[in-house]
Length: 332
Image (cartoon, rainbow, N blue to C red):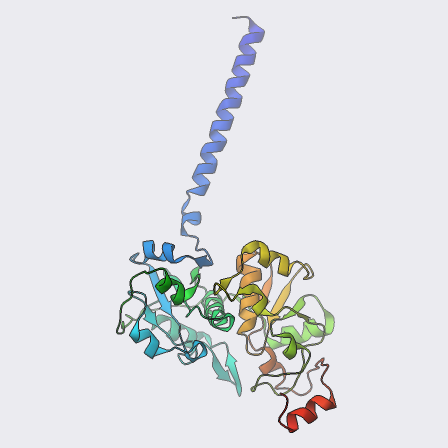
């Protein structure tokens, strides 16, 4: 073989070998344990049906009075093997310093999570009722709380218990007593915003404050009973968590639609809030977990904590006429 031709063949062989090695590396990366162990933020009923008997999977039914359920609804029917932890009563939100709906302390989190049969190796699938955007907010807040506590693998069942039953998956009755485990929290402070940080953002910027409440709350026409004043944190932008939710299917909207809704937000760090950190958890979940935005935090104290101090500023379009209508029983 002529030397030039031989060199050309040898070079081609090296290129082919390089391509083969690159493909092999890609396959290895895709099949690596880190990828295999990663938990999707939303899992389908089909996925759960296939993995329900995995030893590390904990199905956490969080139905409560918020969705018209609670322990009674759980006992009447639930996903086989699921344990129940009432979102509204079990301690996922607590009163601290007179302010309700706050994040539990580390000790409280460790007790709550451990008593729910969860440890650091668990893959928790949070199951809401699947009946409304407010109900989804319950799941998003529990998901966020577990992530803050340092749990690596957490998912929400897409469509909740309603989707599970609609798709004719098996249901069991009665109650499952969870086997308590020892859970040690490793708090992820990158996911949460304390009131001091929000005060600094309000004064100096550095992040976008996202108000996840309906517009009537944002402009000051309505307020939550536990909030002490109307309006929103000055400088915040409004992005109602309900806009992310498809009421016809009782699921989040497709990713492309979620992305389009979030496109108007300024780039960079963001802090979501609402009245109690409930609707805000949905905005956080969509932006951070579904769309992959970096540096998104939840101000869990939200307007209930913010308005507890009358010296904190507020922006509002509320008028004296609004106050008069409320006094006469015709407004909020």
